[in-house]
Each structure stands twice: as structure tokens, then as C-alpha cells.
Image 1 (tube, rainbow, N blue to C red):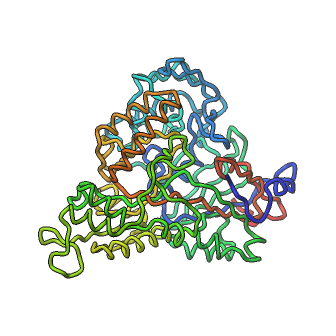
Image 2: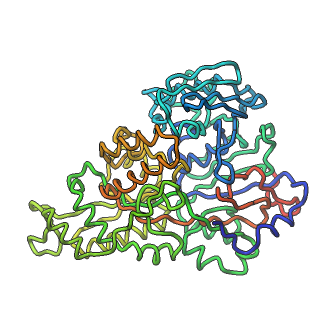
Length: 526
């Protein structure tokens, strides 16, 4: 369900002109800068935001979360599921004017499986037995075995062979000056300040109505809110406090539109499972008992979210509703810690074992007030049971490159945004622990590995649901992390932007159709 505040979608659309005007710019804000604009290396949300406008995949999800063609105009899938033949669009050009062809698809595939390219997305493509170019606009993909996420995996952004063929992906200008086929072209990137895109007048789906997309880097959410109040930012995700209490004013009702819908992801407390402190499951379970998640939902999210129980959100068909969250029980937490050998032997108020205090550093990224407040609640609750927690808030790019990718952390508060297909192999499979890959907490469970493999081989959704329900239960039982909550998405958009049509996919799926009437446009230059 999507809720639109301060207006009814039908009435809102009814006021739009029949022929939208071109022009204007949209200014959005992010707490962190992008790390790379090489599509197959882009794993952080900021990099993905930009890549999603510059590049296209062969397929994508429509507003109702059904897969549809993007660079592929049609396809055939053999009954066995082992072969997919993609027929590519013939009217697509790269931003430098060169035609898009099957050779670009083959090149992207080759780089995805190249062991010298540190991409976190290789797992989906290592199952491919062969990729054949049948002609300039037809490719045949054959899998080694049935692979149910295979079709959706071709939503991966395609890269230009003629530019990147001889490039070192770890050191290429392309990472800061990309050329794609998407609705927007790259214009400039001022590190730590902004990334600017301009509309692609030759886009195969038609020129986007909004001329420029300006992605401002504002590391602090309070500063971003001040920018909203001066109309220096047009679109951003609100914090729960901003959504519930700080935007119910005549100014915001006049100049902005608020939306609310369930996000497809979750926030969690992740442990470095290679750290001896967290190797004992009893310790991780004790920490779960010590955290009052209802306190987080009510006090931090202000009710704009739900408690999470595992790797799938409630909106996923793979969600196991039989898995119940651990209730707040500090007494049980102390008992489990005592069983694991953690007691206050020296009577100083802190738990210790073998003469060492139970102390760890909890990291979160700068600019995310929700995660910071979660960390503070976790710190306070764990102090009550004798665990000493130090909080460190780190700038986003540094947080990822120096701590997450290098596994230099004790514990982190982070979040996952998920694909609509429940395949979570890249996050939970024990083989995905190389630097830059997604299983950075170091989770290993051979039975879960087998189930993840089985889920990829099965096409029947009912049978896949049984598999993923087991995965949900087993990961929850293992407690490799503490699943905290599924937040609501709370975007706000300046009221001059028309054509926004809320749908199950959210509001951004039809961004190229957003437009501003000429008399309301604020930015004129390109």
C-alpha cells in the first residue's frame, strides 16, 4: 500500500496538462557520495542511484513488479529453463552515438565472470554455461543447470564494449565518466559535492521531460531538511521524525508532496563472525534478547516500520510468517551470557571472560540519524547487561572502503535493499566472502548453502517458497546478525513535479515521465 499525503493521486494527475512541458531540473540529496560508476562494481546505494539513470539492463520491473523488457524487446525461454534467447532493441545508441549490440551484452557477461574483476554480482552469471551471439541483436544464454533467478538477473546494467574492452576495471576513467544507454547522460562529478546528469534526447523510450538531474551530497540529514525548507532540494527520503512531526506545516503542504510505502529491505545489527567474541551463538542470541526492538519501532521510527525477523521483508512471497521475533528479556540475556562464560568476575559492572572485558565497537555511517539512534539504544541496553559498547560514526565512502570491504569492524548497524526475487545467495552463501562481496559478516552454514543452491534450481514458486521459508528459519536460528526492523520508505517531492503515479514499485519507476509545467519551472540552463 502506498499513501499519498496532502492530495489524491487521481486529482493530482487530473490537473496535469495533456502535453507535458520539457525543462527544469530536479535536485535530490544523498548522505553519501558514489564510489564508482562502473555498473558491475556499483554496490552502494549512491552509486546505484546514478547507474540506474545512466545505464539499462535487458529487463526490469514494471510498476506492478512484473518483469518487462528494457534493452531486450522480446525473448523466448525454453520449457526446461536452461535456455533464454533475448532479442535486443535495434534503435538504441550509447551516449557517444555508437550503436548498442549483442557484443556489449557478451562483453558485460565476460567481465561479470572474470576472476580479476572484483564484482559482487558474479554469482548470478557463473551459472551460465555459454552466451552466444546469434546476430547483432540476438543473444542465446544457456545455463549449466536450471537457474530460477536467471531471467531477472539480466536486469544487470550493460556496459559498452568499445570503451571498456581494454580498460583496467580497478583503475579506469569510466568509473567517474560513464557512458551508458539510459535516459540520462553523465555531465560532471564534483567529489563530495554533487553529480550532474542531463537528459538523453535520443533515449529509445523518448526524451525525459526533466532536463537535469542534480545529485547533491549532503552528509547530514538535518542540513538536508534545512535545504528542503529553502527549496534547495526537490526530492529526498525523510526521517520518521521529519515525516511525522516536522513537515505538517502550511509551508510543506503547499510546496511538497509526501509519500509512504513499505520499503523492500531491512535494517540489522551485523557481527563480524570471525571475531571470537561473536563466534558463540549464545552470545549473539543474548544480545538479541537484550535489545528492545519495540522501543526502536516506537521511539526511533515513530511507528513507521515493523520488526524484522529475517532476510525477507513481509511483502516478499518468500517471507516465513511462522518466524517470530525474539522478545525483550534482559534476564534471559544474562543467563545465556553466563552459560557462554561471560560474568562480572571483578565486580566492576562489566562482563568479562579470561580477564578480558566484553567490549566492542559498533559502527554506523554518518548522516543516517535513524541508524545512529538505533546504535545509541543498543549501546544503552547492552550496558544494562554488562557489555561495553563504543559507537563510531564514519563517513559513508570511508565506512564502506576501509571497514566493510576490509572486514575491519566488530559490529555494524546497516541495511539491505533487496531484489524482488528472494534469491539471497550473494548475501548469505559462504562462498561470497571475498573483499567487495556481500557476505562481509562471514556467515557460514553448509545446509543454508545447499538450500540457497536448491532455491536457484527450482522454478515452481510454491516449492521455492518452501525452500526460502526454511532459509528464513535457519538464518534466524543461527543469529548471524540481529534483524531489527523493516522501515517504511518516506520520500518527499516538490509539488511542482507532476506525473508521479504511486504504484507497488513505489514512485520512481516512471521518473522519465515526471514533468514540470513551464510556468512553474525553476531552472532554465542545461
